[in-house]
Image 1 (cartoon, rainbow, N blue to C red):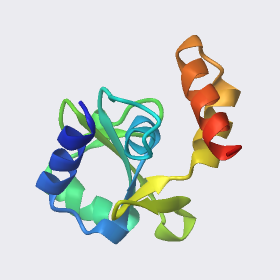
Image 2: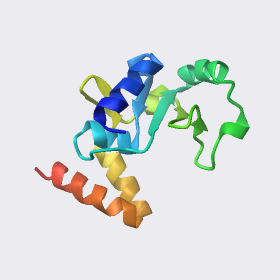
Image 3: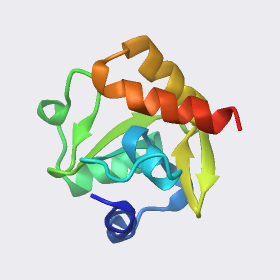
Image 4: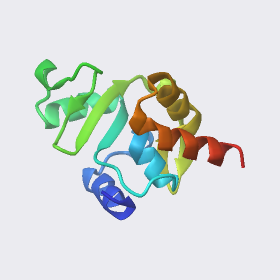
Length: 126
């Protein structure tokens, strides 16, 4: 999905903007460091997760090995206490900090991460 589609998807969820932040590819897309992303990963507050758990009838079977719960084919969420949020605001949305994404991608160091690593480093070194 592109930036416009991502924003439309976020708005359709109608979530309180201070109770979640966008992770990974969605963050890079909103920061202008990617053209597209395949899905939307969100870090949600523990309080918001309770609401989502009820609304989407989530259970442990919906949780993957990384701790993310699948809401839809395009959306996964991971609950985190709000005091642990590591985010910055971009165009009215909270997004994962580029430093956090960079550290994760460098640690994982997959071939698919190399372009993102280069783009983030270039952006941060401006």
